Image: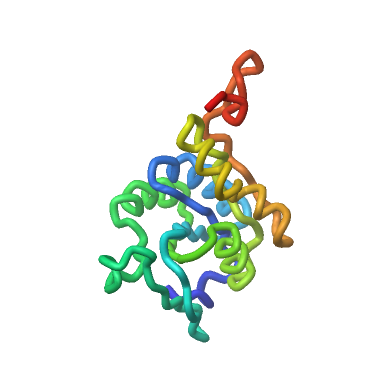
Length: 170
């Protein structure tokens, strides 16, 4: 399905391991809007160097042993997500992009005329805290750098008595 056929679809930024929760919520919005859903994986380990008129992005990996491998949406992840959309009768498309995640999601959503972007909250734990410290929150970047509404799905909510993920000592 070409990008022009995705006009008005809800955009969901997904990552393996948390895609199901994000897609379940995004499917609810797409069903309410009477539109489809496009799930997007962004590979930050690749650098985009040009974009075709049809939206096709040419990129190269930062690791030289992967020079011939273009970005591809994970087939196993798609197999997990598709039944979630099908259960509500929501058409599902997938895309794999390369570059800085918030920039790529915002630009793609703008290009297809998406009504909103749905992403998951940050990953709990030391690994997620370190990654977010160095790269920043995708949701935070999205809310400050583009015009569309951003829905952030809580992936690991904590109770009031627990420390927030960024409050843990390193």
